Image (cartoon, rainbow, N blue to C red; front, side, top):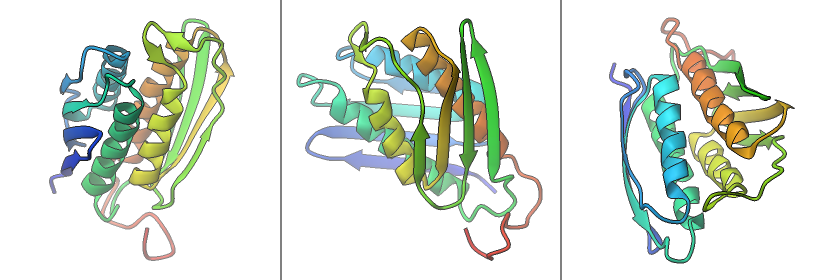
Length: 197
């Protein structure tokens, strides 16, 4: 079984081509515009691929002359769609995953359930509004797009706060590790008593 997905999502605001391999080696090839703080998001997506051992290719552009909002949000949507497609009928997956990740002064917990229902709880508290050109509040828009379109329960909890860069990076790494655990194959049964996820 090949757990892969290719997403082509084009709107009047953004153009995204994305390929995801769940059973990969953490390889990534990501091309985003070099403005509107997007190099920071590129770095975060690279961290997610590396620590999740997901192979990820992205070619994306959009109306970044306005700001990064549309592209950040739509990248969350596209990645969520890819996750939902690649995981398929969820037969054999662990379904649940969690990870607590330290990064210097910061400690972040991520818990995820690939249950077929979208829910997001993000308890991170940012003490900075910007990281260079990146608007830290766009992280929430990315998470909304991701959780809604992957149809997952996604919880992020700040156990110890600090620098916004560390909070977001710890979150991406914790998400990767939690999703890696949730998507691990344990057999061939559907992980529910309901008969469908």
